[in-house]
Amino acid sequence: MASKYETKTDRKYTKEHEWALTEGDEVVVGISAFAVDQLGDVTLVNIDVKPGQTIEEHQAFGTIESVKTLSDLFAPVSGTVTRVNTELENRPELVNEDCWGKGWMIAIKPSDPERLSALLDADAYQKHVESSGQ
Image (cartoon, rainbow, N blue to C red; front, side):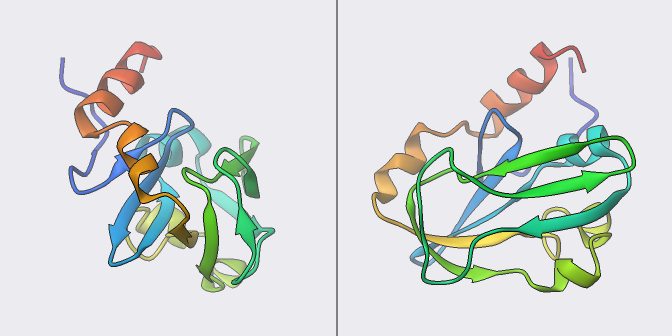
């Protein structure tokens, strides 16, 4: 059964519905279309980390709030935060409008880039979404 949620094959995924896209020596992090659908209209994105700060894999780096719920955002890999999407402070709706692009959250320079291979590829992520009853 094909999922009704778009999944990009150029990135890896976590079971918590974050995506990780490698760009040079950085990993850009955002949330998947499935996560956006589950959240509904995003009303607030709060990112608690700053560039230069180190972060651990699975560590919460912020929260995302919608009309339905409040959810933590988790780092897919350990490393140093290189960039934060400050535009989301004033325009959280970018996550709804373009979760794969303009709605990115943070960028991390991974301390161990090999850890990315432990994340789900697009097919495995699709199976994860489908197994969650969606």
